[in-house]
Image (tube, rainbow, N blue to C red; front, side):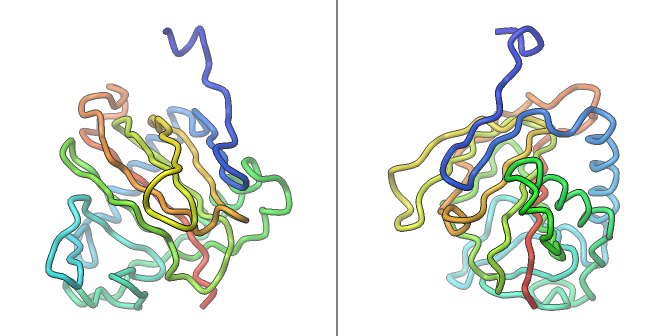
Length: 215
């Protein structure tokens, strides 16, 4: 169906978990992409994440504010070049608060976002089911998508398996989860390569995830 003729409605996927399609307009997507490209440059730039078991994540990552590594946070890239993590910009925190409020209501607007995890997916990258549980705060997680469409699998708090809901996230989409869904398992089982808006000029998918450290 024609996306312009049949707009995608916002949806509550689970209690406290809301998908808002087309939340970022084309200009905002371009601006955010330009910022991501600067953040990805070394030092403390885009890196391959290695797990304690010796494996590697297929999505590459850069962090702002606090550096995430499996499974903790540091002020330097302890599993990379050792450089200080790039600062978390105030405008990105304001964007996160606005996103949380738009998705979950005014009560969610007070979150003091201070972490960004930016994951880059090529067409073969995936993200296994996991929980965002290394923070010391329970503020909602804000997720913004740029580029290729993906299948975002949003599950439950008890197990990595069913029940879960598969959501199609396109460029510009917002997904927020908090409250009873804050520690729900989620992942990306599939990226649809070549589906990014041509005018964006991005090959692959970027996911910008904003969190509150509580530190």
